[in-house]
Structure formats: C-alpha cells, structure tokens
Amino acid sequence: MAIAHEDIIAIFNKVKFPYNISKPTAAIAHKALDNIHLMEANAKSILEQKEKIIEELKKLPTVRKVVLC
Image 1 (spheres, rainbow, N blue to C red):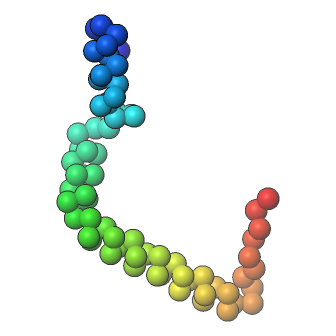
Image 2: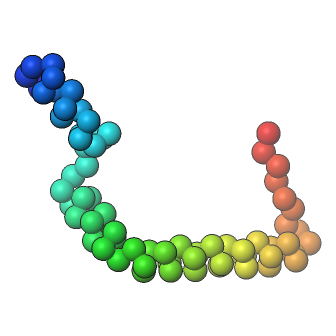
C-alpha cells in the first residue's frame, strides 16, 4: 500500500511487477536470463526426450492414451 498522489501511484503501477518476488528468486531469474542459450538448449533436450518417451510408451501393449474430458 502506498500513500501518494494518484498520478504518482499510477506511474509506479506502470513499472511495478505484477507480483512481488524475493531477492533470491530475482537473482536466480537474472542468472538464468544471462545464460539464455543454455536454457534454450535444455528446453530443446527436454522436448526431445519427451518425444522419445512418448514413442517408446506407444510400443507397449499395456499403455493406452487417456482422453480427459
């Protein structure tokens, strides 16, 4: 909560994060963004592994696709 003129509060609300995060969380996020190429490589690897798992599961006769309604 802030006590200030409406115009000043409006300016602060334009630059404020949508939710508060702790300093350690912000530091981790900053470090991750500094290594975006590594994050992208990890994401690509995870997606490739996911596809491999899906294909291997399809080969098992006891595994069926579950449709959620």
